[in-house]
Image (cartoon, rainbow, N blue to C red; front, side, top):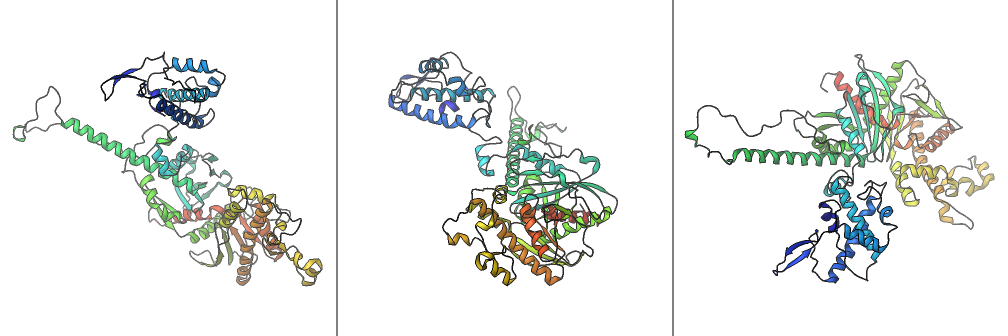
Amino acid sequence: ALYLRARPLCAAPAPARRGCAKRTARGRRERTGCCGGTMGQSQASTEAAAAAAAASADAVVDGVRPGGHGGAVGAGGGGADDEHGGMSVRELEALAVQRGIPVPNSSSLDRRGFLVALLRAYDVGAGVASGRTPCPLSSQSGSSSEASATGGVVCSSVLAVLQKIRDAPGHMGCDIGGTLVKIVLALPPDEAASYHFPEKFGKSGRAHHDLEFEFVLADGAQFVLRFLSGSTCQMEQAVQHLNIRRRDSQRKNHSELMEAAANADSPRLGTSAPQSPRSRPAAPVEPTSPKLPTCRFTRLMSDWSDEVFSSLSRPIRRMATAGGGACKFAPLFRDALRVEMVPVKELAAVVDGMMFLAYQRRCSGSQVAEVNDGADLFTIGENGEGLPLPWPDPLFPLILVNMGSGVSILRVDSAEEGDFVRVGGTACGGGTFLGLARALTSATTFDEALELAAAGDAKHADKLVSDIYGEEGCANLGLPGTLTASNFAKLGDMAPGWSCSEKDLARSLLQMVTQQSVLLASAFARHAGCIDRVFFVGGFVDEPNWMARERIAANFRGLGGCAYFLKHSDFLGALGSLRCALKVLEDGDGQ
């Protein structure tokens, strides 16, 4: 471990060193290596330290193999295995002596493995000292304490996007849920070209270029809408990272100013002592202490991962935000980004977002859009194809089913603000699907769970009506035999020859979650007299989950109704927040 930290701080590989002289507490002089380790210590202690050094070297160097985060390993830029793998023990010993590394003599060690590990550690340290290789003992974007505080290493591309969003002109709306954060930017057309975002950033960040479209306000102002989403956890880590950088920068700047002021006030060599107040001249004296920065905002350091906000005088930007994160993350955003989150009621934001799309489509003069257009309304046909639809006329009343982590069902009675009521819902939603999928299958993400479900067959896990009554009994009852009688019921029978794969479990789980919402929504729609105007929105029925949309549409066709889907379904909360911000602007109440 000492070779990693201390030895590489010496000069680059040089001829064998004879060691440094050091006086011990006993008064005798002993030869030491450049790391400061006493070579006069006992052989057993030396061997133990050497074994620990070898283990530490292996553990650290393994984290910076060529092609990994650490880049190339070794003083010469090649991998340690390539450089030392074909050398004999004698050649390795000669190389260690050449580089000035003291090697203990012992028969109890794996001699060759120990020498390779020691030389690998030396090469890594030499690369760090020369600046060719990042230090493997620290995180990519800060200290180990910083990485611990933010929950892990923060990707620089996430920081770049986050700060670009903060500095974007125009207006924005945000929806921070328990799983995803969604942001809509309304950019002036003449500046939109300067604010393109990568299609992917970090582990979960996405720019949805296929959703972009232009719109015009009542006063003639034009904007281009850009849509971004990412993991709420990833966003939180990135903002925490910036907050830590900001605090570190403030502390550093304060210390430098205080030190400069102290140096300016202290008497210098060759100058006279300061005069007493009575003997000072009346003429004003030019101050020698440094002035505080006059700029309102200065970016420090060069790359995005280290860029911080260094001035508290930067204007605060307001951002309309829906979802639970509007309250949870408000202090963090204010401190790190100087962004004040203005809370918007979540269900109101979803309804307003839908009204925003309906208004824009009607104002554009095109009631029917192609499925690949920006603002679409469509259903799913019998063959699984998307069928574009006009907005219903009349539109109200309608049932709006918001399927996210949980499910809320709203009845919207008109386009007037707040003219809706939550009529019901269920806790069996997208969060249920992902949580049980992780418990029952090998899937760890939503996309992996959907991939398993796509290859599965629910009838291997679910008990159908035909399994209970038989085909003849179903005919007598007038019920389709394919109806689900009980979810996962076949897992309790364990009949001989029965088998159920994890793919079948995932498909059964997907159908269970979907059926709950369909049954509730159809009941409320019949009660409101709008079985032909039921809208399913939210992240659970977004583009990747085509299976859920197919089942929902098929069920409503069987009931004589129609299930509508929106291409922007996962961004209704963010669109509603944006609409709130634009309404405030139109009313002249501020920005």
